[in-house]
Image (tube, rainbow, N blue to C red; front, side, top):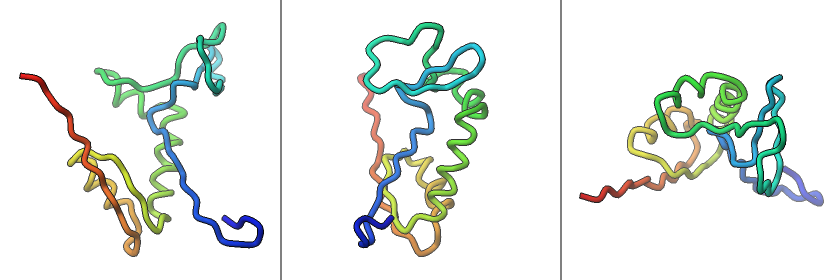
Amino acid sequence: MTVNGRQSRTVAVWKVHGSLDWFQDASKQIIGVRSALTIPANYSPLMITPGIDKYRLAHGEPFRTILGCSDLALQNARSYSALATASMTSMFKQNLSSDATAILYPWLSSQKS
């Protein structure tokens, strides 16, 4: 990206599981409402949450398109950083171009005994 004639670094944040401010109506129209304190009338939240439907929902729109675009962004990136589980690390490295730098931060889940 060029800003005032100078090359600038950019950061792309891909929210592949949706966002708290994404909503969808019965006709599948998707809207984003910044700082929404309530769910807009006739809309329902559009987010993939942990559960048995997580993987099925990830293959529907808009998530399928977002995942494809994020994969392409990783393939074209010169560097990236991610909060990732051990199983996600290999997936990130497969999608990153060969001359890119990766910084992976481990995602640790603590469990109480």
